[in-house]
Image 1: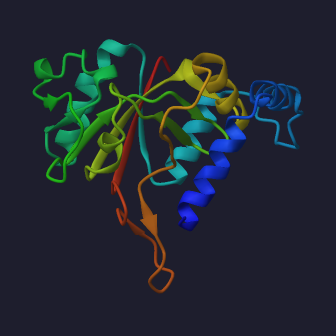
Image 2 (image 1 turned 180 degrees about the horizontal axis):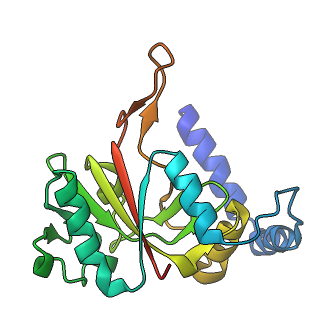
Length: 214
C-alpha cells in the first residue's frame, strides 16, 4: 500500500463512521454560534468607502445611476484609454446591450488571446476595496483572471462593510461555497524585483469598476 492509499483509506474510514452526520451537525452548529473577533467599525457611506479604497489599490472607478447606463460607460472608458472593444463576458451580465454600444463580447470562458473581460461580482467589501467573485458555469473565473483588462460591474446594494459580512452573505444566500471564491483587490501586482511594484504580473494589469445605483 502506498502512502497515498493509506491516507485516503483513513479518510474514507473516518467519513464512513456512523456518527459522521452528528459530528458534522455539531461542527456546523459551532460555526453558526461562534462570535466574531475584533473588527473595525465601518459606518457611513459604504459606496464612498469602497470607491476610495479601490482607487488606492490602482483600480479606476465610475458610478452610474441605472444599469442601462453600463454599456455606454464601458464603451466610453475603453475608447478614452485606447483599449480593445472585443472580449469576453460572464453570462450573468451578458444580457446588457453591449453590441448596441459597439462592443463585441462573447459569453464564454476567457483564453490567453482575450484582452478584455467583463464580469459581475457577488458582492464587494468596503473596508478593503475588494471584489468577491464566485466561480460557476455562468461565471467562469478565467474572465476576471486572464485578460489584461478586467471590468467588473458592482451593484451598490451589494457592498458590505467587512470580509466577515461578505462570508455571512455568501452563507445566507448560497449555503455552501462554490469550487472557487476569488477576492480581487485591484490589478495584479508584484514587488519581487528590487521591491518595485509592477502591475499585471499574474493577472490583469487594469481593473475598472462600474458602480451601479450610486
